Length: 203
Image 1 (tube, rainbow, N blue to C red):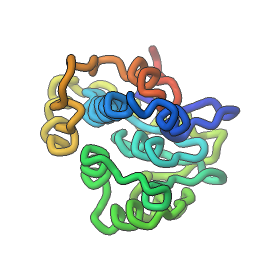
Image 2 (cartoon, helix red, strand yellow):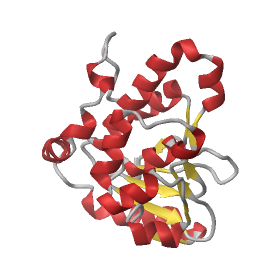
Image 3 (cartoon, one colour):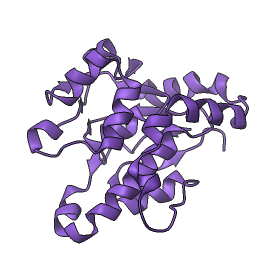
Image 4 (tube, one colour):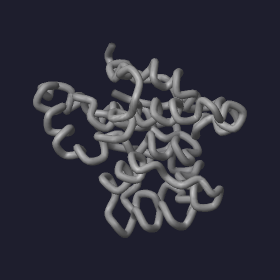
């Protein structure tokens, strides 16, 4: 599965304006966001994020939730600004980031508000590689195409075991009816996460 967004749009974060204007719905909203992240983290297919611009806050976490990440080499930053905007990470979001990054990279990313360009993001292991914009999607697709034949049941079980602590978030344990974990695209829309549609190469 490949996630990207049209170059003409800026889709990199939670819709904080909506959150501030609808504070009464914030708990359910954050629950949906965490369900989305848990679903992507354990999705039983190889996943890759093609980051073709800025990825801040929850947009960066959404990218980190993928198995692999490729970032545009000449433009854009990956940043967790929570420390500078006084918005602490939820336990589920913090667990996800820490499950994917080394302790040193997690400290650098989560506690400083630093903006990582592509070369620095590769250096810290936030993304796997950088590519020119014209080659970004092709590079991302080529990276996961050889993995397309993996058995979904096995891969899903492996991911669920690997990321059990991060995937078992308050989103799954909280009150209320169970959320639909089977359709990331619908979750993106419901969460008002400013991010792009899901694209399945070859389908």
